[in-house]
Image (cartoon, rainbow over all chains, first blue to last red; front, side, top):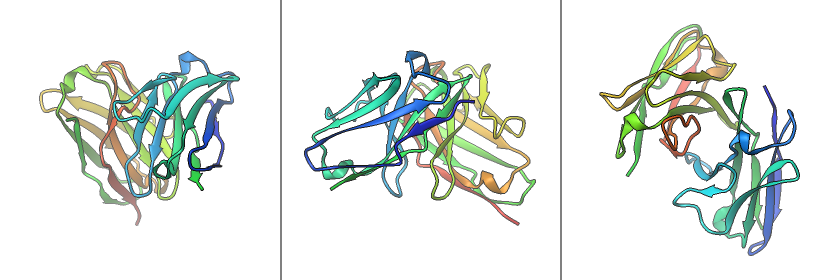
Length: 109
Length: 120
């Protein structure tokens, strides 16, 4: 089973841009991994931000976008807001099951 | 509005069993794949299991395979997770989630979760 890796923590300034990445120990992340991205704030259930690389949930703000970048899945936040401070998780399809990354704690400061 | 309400969590002993339920409303339950995701206290998310809309295809994480069984009753709009041989590392909040389509075993809409604690 592949190990999915994310940056443990990142910091972005308000109004700034940051890219979170999601890699796989089995090689390049492709469309066949159906990458998903989730946001979770303390004490809350996760919410789905992005599915299938770049498609957005109905609630996802336009400042979030997903892509494949350099063999990884990527989540880009353009114009960070204080309310974007949260933990972000990616999920990849691997070997007939889902595998989450360890999460990235994003600080807006 | 999609609503997913988990129940059945609580305290169980090591080696014991529990059955979680997830009551779904606000959508055509029988048309969507469903999944369970858990989160141990202070830890990250772990995908546990998924099931296709018809119930005939089920999938499990290695950590629970052979101990957990996912099922659904489309007539009752309810998803289940039967857990046997419970261990301390099964302690977690368990979330029920709806997929995007009939074969979707990744979470798209989430419930609020139910806490399972394994302790003697």
